[in-house]
Image (cartoon, rainbow, N blue to C red; front, side):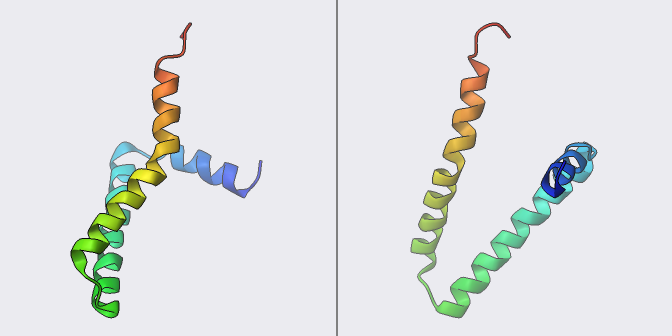
Length: 76
């Protein structure tokens, strides 16, 4: 098993509270980076916000398709 396989296994074994804390920290970090980039490059925040929402929706398509398709597989 490679590096990413071991990392995935360790990540899957985390307690729920630690996993939630990890995800919240990444979310807050992303918000902070977005605010800093808007201030640094003097972008229109509304346009950047909509752009981030659209990118997030596009990135979520593959995982959403996988989740929904696995919900409706016969025989399980």
